[in-house]
Length: 130
Image (cartoon, rainbow, N blue to C red; front, side):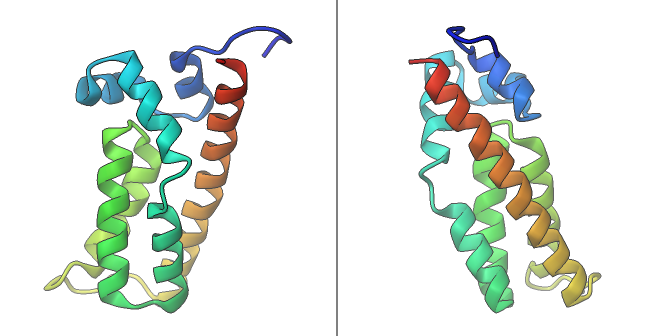
């Protein structure tokens, strides 16, 4: 971004590889997309998910991944939502496990890295849109 240039919400979504159109379909207005994407940076849903990943508790992983999937889908954070969905289905009661614990841990680490990049993008947006 150029120095002194404001960043639009659409530019943020390009930077974080999100789906702005999906977010606007759910939230209906730029003002609400802006409000909720800023709040995502303070939401503890990812930390809860990562903590569940540390313990590898199946029930906690299912609940945390399910919550993360919903929030990220509503915000148009498609990659995070897809990653959370995979873990949700892996631990959904009644489903047969398809992944090893190591594969699950690898996917959780991928969520951690993508989340970090997403938050950096949101922080940049906050700094350039005030």
